[in-house]
Amino acid sequence: MEQYQVGILGGGPGGYVCALRAAQLGLSVVLVEGDRLGGTCLNRGCIPTKALIKSADFWRELQQVEEFGIRAGESSFDFAKMIERKDRIVHNLVLGVEQLFRTAKIPVIKGWGEITEAGRINVETETGQVRLKVENLVVATGSTPFRIPVPGANLDGVMTSDHILDEKTLPEKLVIIGGGVIGLEFASAFQALGVKVTVVEMLPSLLANSDDEIPRRLTSVLKKRGIDIFTKTMVKEIKSAENRLITVVENAKGIQEIFSDRVLLATGRKTNLCGVNAQRLGLQLEGGSIVVDSQMRTSVPNIYAIGDVTGKAMLAHVASAQGMVAAEHIAGHQVEMSYRAVPSVIFTHPEIAAVGATEQELRTAGVKYKVSKFPFSANGKALVLGETMGTVKILANEEGVILGSSIMGPQASSLIQELVLGVEKGLNAEVLAKTIHAHPTLPEAIMESAHGILGKPLHLA
Image (cartoon, rainbow, N blue to C red; front, side, top):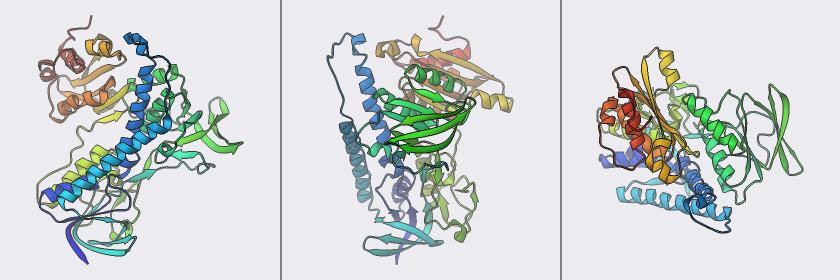
């Protein structure tokens, strides 16, 4: 029986980062993974979807090149080659992670692991069973797409985000069930590629947990582009007829049928406890997720849990941060996981990003606050890019300390990081306002919005 100080079940962005950090700290580590390193994020989620979105964005921009004085002539795209490009990117990144493990001398056991008792993992591999004894066990088994319990949810052509990017041809019509992050990213990308998209959401608005303004503005943008959006709408059934799918929905207008070639289930994800044997181990669960403390410890000594399986925030960057905390705590460091400033990003067009509190959260908590908004239509670089839709919004308390922010506009996914730092460190908006920002750049919109907290943006009438 092989023995290690740390054994990790799952090689996603939580598990593999935990392994690398533990090895850096001098611990002997083994990782068990049944698929490729990188987990859902690298192989089926974050990276492949963004690769497709980039191709879709290029195609969208190509339709507008005449505005930049360019005559491109007749153009077309090859969806199969877009998918090939996506596969190459994923392959290269997986190879990169594998090389990191070889360099760090971390063994990866390829197979499906089962925790038989605290400190024991049995792994079924292609060549037989491998038994591991570990001093500290880290559960990083992630999550899987949730299939709504309606008739027809398992029909051919009804897909989850795990498989829709394996398709080599575009559907003519696509119904997306779920108006959250995953659903809207796919809606934005597929619409740009000419697919007729319909989004069905049971709640009153898209992106239900976002700042109130974001769902309203994004809904307007998507509708103008021809995406049909049904809110307050329940899916009753999915049927198949003559090689087409029929999604039966019900709302205030009654029963309706929506015809499509494919249906994407984007109805959230559920924790994956396969092989964990949570009840046998005595792990405390809450809502199907493993309960952990701020050091990522579970209710059982020397067993940690990180990533989606904890149900804290199903985001790759949160999983990685949790993995770092778990590794460092195992190594004897005094560390705690903080969720004070977790950025969320939506790669629609335009992009959306947020951090910290929303207005509705502050109102509910009875916190007095200031609001400042600066539009990209008043930002020189945004005008140069031809991307003027959206704003930078900053929320601060009465003393000017930054409490939260949301950005809708060009490169919001990158711009938000300045506000993440502001929320994490409790910076006053004055710090951002008086920090020199290069010109002409998009981050100047953050500086201007910060000036708004102090009184008034400089470049806004």
